[in-house]
Amino acid sequence: MMKCLLCNTTLAFDFSWRWFFSFRAFETVPLCEKCHQKFVAIAEKTSCPGCGRKQKQRKLCQDCLRWRKLQTELLYNKAFYVYAEPNMRAYFEAYKFQGDYRLRQIFVKTLQDHCKKYLHRGWLVVVIPVDEQTLAARGFDQVVGFLPDIPKKMYLYHLKKFDRCPQSHKSRQERLATPQPFGYCGPADLERKNILLVDDIYTTGSTLYHARELLLAHNCGCVRSVTLAR
Ligand SMILES: [Zn+2]
Ligand SMILES: [Zn+2]
Image (cartoon, rainbow, N blue to C red; front, side, top):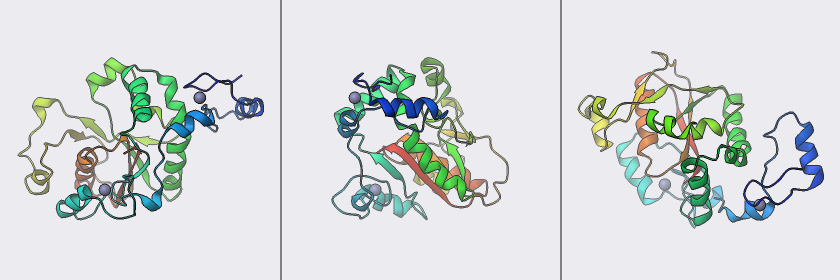
């Protein structure tokens, strides 16, 4: 019997058997309908096209209007759920901070289906990494955990605090206000390949825009992003 990962209710019989025989454990979601509905989904037609934030209408939010002044192009982030509500916060608390690795399964299908659409069009999927210390403490990378079947590129790594040099690339880097947190370890030339960045939460956008700076510096094509929550 398959049980809801959040409330432990037994899920419908055929559901669990379909899961059992699918050989692809992540095709179905181990979550009951009641728990699923507790998360606040973001409808695309009423979200900010820049960051995916839930709004009343589809227009750029204040944050994205600011980003647009600094960036030549927005990331057009896709976000699935609202972060600033108790259920999603509790989810991340349990998954990331208490380290319940099983909980990744709830959103694997959502994120993988989105990535697959891009992979089919020849895009690369690049993951925003967690820093070494967090990885050691948590034992897993929460974004990698969401993408078990996706060919992921780990082109970025966290610079150690003392290695970060805010003065290294003046121009646009400086305009991002915070120092570049990442180093780059991908191919020297990305040959204009388009890239989908994946992260768990879009907060200010600066992590993702910093990541894009590095990819652009290595000759990538277009960069878009997707996050589970915004
Ligand atoms: Zn449930
Ligand atoms: Zn926005």
